[in-house]
Image (cartoon, rainbow, N blue to C red; front, side, top):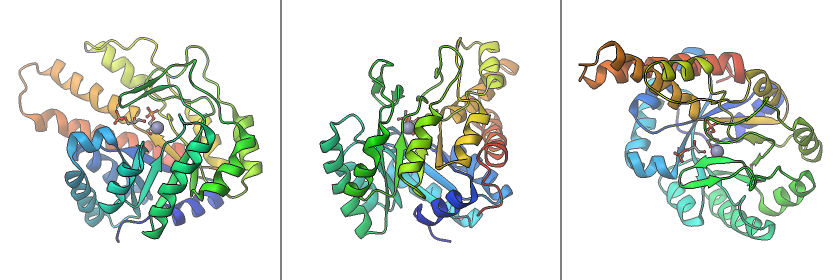
Amino acid sequence: MPLVNTTEMFKKAYEGGYAIGAFNVNNMEIVQGITEAAKEVNAPLILQVSAGARKYAKHTYLMKLIEAALIETDLPIAVHLDHGDSFELCKSCIDGGFTSVMIDGSHLPFEENIALTRKVVEYAHEKGVTVEGELGRLAGIEDAVNVSEEDAAFTKPEEVEEFVSRTGVDSLAIAIGTSHGAYKFKGEPSLRFDILEEVQRRLPGFPIVLHGASSVIPEYVDQINQFGGNMPGARGVPEEMLRKAASMAVCKINIDSDLRLAMTATVRKKFAENPSEFDPRKYLGPAREEIKKLVKHKLINVLGCAGKA
Ligand code: G3H
Ligand code: 13P
Ligand code: ZN
C-alpha cells in the first residue's frame, strides 16, 4: 500500500470515536518499534517528523525507513511534518514525498496565521497533501522554541470557524491545557474539555488534533531516576483524559516524549546491568522492543484504533 494522506483515516476516526496515533520518528529503532506494534494490532498510523528530526536523520533516510516500514506492514501510513514553521519547509517536505504537513502559525497574529496557513494549503492540496493548522499556544519545548507558561494561551473557540473556512485546513490543533515535554502539570492534571466541546459544536465533523499528549508514564520516569537520571516532578496527561478526547472530535493524538522516555529508561537500565556493554544492538534492540510494547498499549487501550487499518 502506498503512503496515504490523513483524509480517510480522520473521517473513519471521527465517525468511530477513536483517534490515530501520531508518533514522532528520529531513527530506525523508533520507526521499527512503532510500525511493528501497529502491524501486530492492525492500526493505521501517522509517523511525524519534526524539523529537528529531519536535520538529525536527514529527509531521505527517514523517508526510506518509512518506505521500508510500508513494505513490511502494508498498513495505511501517513508521513507528516510536525510543527512546520515556514512555507519553504512545508514545500520542501511536500516535494520530498510527505503526505501531510502541519503549518504552525500559532505564534503569529490571527490574520498572519491565516495568510501563511492558506498559502501552504493552496500548495499542498494541489499535490493531494493534507494540512494541519494551529490556533492557541501550548507551553513547553519544541525544537529551539521554549514557550513559557505565561506565553501559552488556550484556543479561542470563537475564532475556529473563520480560521478553518478561510484557510481550508484539513485538521486543527487546539490548546486545551496540554504542553510539550515531560513536565506538563505542576499540580493535578486538568484539561479544558469545555473548550474542546465548544470547538466541536462550532465545527461539526471536523478533525481536531491534540499536541503534547504524552502520559509521561511513571514507570519510565521511576526507572530513569533509579538508574542515574534526574527527572523529579515529570508528569503527563492521564490516559483516561486522552480516551475521552479520542471519543470526542480529537482524531490525532501526538506522542513523542513517551517514546523518548521508553527508550531512555531501557538504555539506562541496560548500562546499569552491564556497565561494560559496548554493542549498540544490546541496548538499542531492547529499547526498540520497549517502544513496541508502549505503542501497542497506546493503540489498543488509549487511542482505540487497533483493528481499524
Ligand atoms: O512537539 C515537539 C516534538 O516533540 C518534536 O520534538 O522538535 O525536539 O524533534 P523535536
Ligand atoms: P509530547 O511531548 O507530549 O510527546 O508531545 C508531542 C507533540 O505534540 C509533537 O508535536
Ligand atoms: Zn506538538
